Image 1 (cartoon, rainbow, N blue to C red):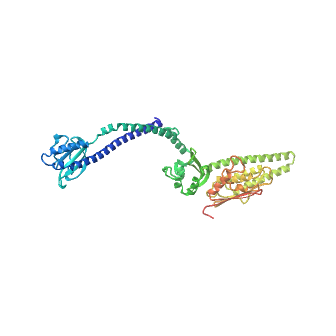
Image 2: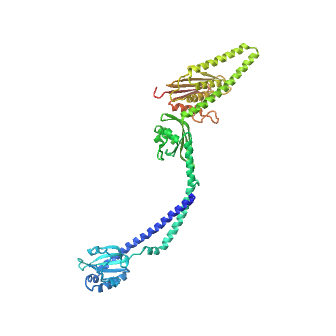
Image 3: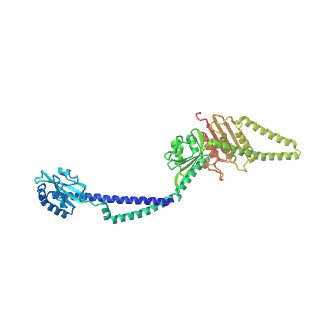
Length: 532
């Protein structure tokens, strides 16, 4: 059965049962109301009968039934009740619709209290059937001594008789209720079907299981939160990042800030961001480990429904980045050096052909000495070979671009600052130098880029300076914004944003100094946390 058919059948069944139950309750309510009204009517008639002198004076007297019976019967017929019974203090009847029962003892068992001057209404089964009967004591003329009891009974209608009496009203109510229930069930079934995108329950369950399996298999931590910051999904890797315990249970009542209290301010800012914005690869320190966190808004039918958060272990990301960066640096260096050496070889070959061997020899010696000096300097001052390779590659690229690249001889990198990897240094240094190269147009002359790198376990200092066109005042506030670029090319505006994220994640400072047509200087300073 389809979801629509199930919903229609179940809803219609529930409505039918509700209407039938309501009909029964209505009949019973009518029955109770009848009984109450009949009881009040019987009590009023019994009081009247008990006050009649001819009845009051002949109760308990031998032969009194000959006087009492006619009065009781006339009253019964006049008031349209089912029976009026007069009994004395010994429960002997003095009147009854069936004259054969006169003189016999009253039956029922509910008359005892009336023999003690109590007035009440009782429901009981007598000789004529189920009835509501009122008991009113009969007092003597002075009203002091009780001489008997007046019992007025009215037969109560049975359930079947009430149903028969109101069958038309009940039937009409049932028909209208079922019609309304049918259309209401149909509307409800169609509405639910629409909200579930016309999917059957088993299809929804399969999609949920597939989504969960895909999310669990991904090599990044994934967290989904609703618009109030409550966690709706967290995969296995995210649990390991956050708890170091993949078995911990997460419920919809858990808030993301509850598990990451040290990121309270950051997460609150993220969740309060306009949903048109997103955060990509922001470095965050979570429980002494650095992660790259990205946040994307989630929309359901155009309405903001929460956020989707991814977490990547930055150590692993840096390992992959170092591999990629190392290959790219090597390729760039080889390409630039190949281009440069081809030009040198062409010059040397030309001088030899012109038999100017002394000048050709001078070029070879100068080139050899220059390369040996820079390689020896890097070997002694820079302990990380990937950083040395980056600087050699940038030096070769500078020659290709016609830029004079000067590495300050005060530079050194004896150790990597705690919290930094070689990939971090390469990313920061490479982006700053490349950005300085791009500060010049091809036709400019006297293009100079200077670089200072100093680092050990306690501090890191990077200074990159150029004499290019500088940065306009209106661009300074956005120069480190992700996606912003003055080059107006797709895929730009990422390098400086990554630089700022890496440095600020380690508590460092990024200072920018620039003047139009005089150049730009960017200074990076990071000290080990806890030391001044």
